[in-house]
Image 1 (tube, rainbow, N blue to C red):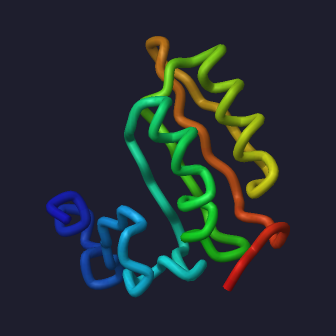
Image 2 (image 1 turned 30 degrees about the vertical axis):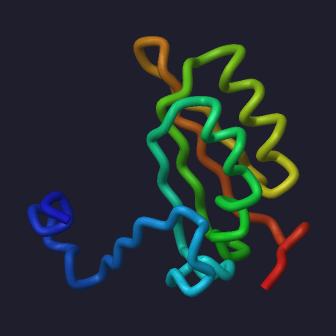
Length: 108
């Protein structure tokens, strides 16, 4: 939130830390505009259904903490059933994967 304050957007930003254990977490039922995760490959792969369930159709996801190349290819392959327009940006061997939630497999 410090960054949001520095950029003058804290009044338009609500942040939640969702781990999937509480279905009452705001955004947990497909209402999040964006989900951002900076975690390693195994959790990214294991949390695919949870993350996809958080993002509303037309919302965005951004995943980082993933090594570029083989790991990023696995993430794209797995997440492409939930997200369209997937982009893989990379720098220094690390990848940031982003995409737009489609309406396929959406459970509200």
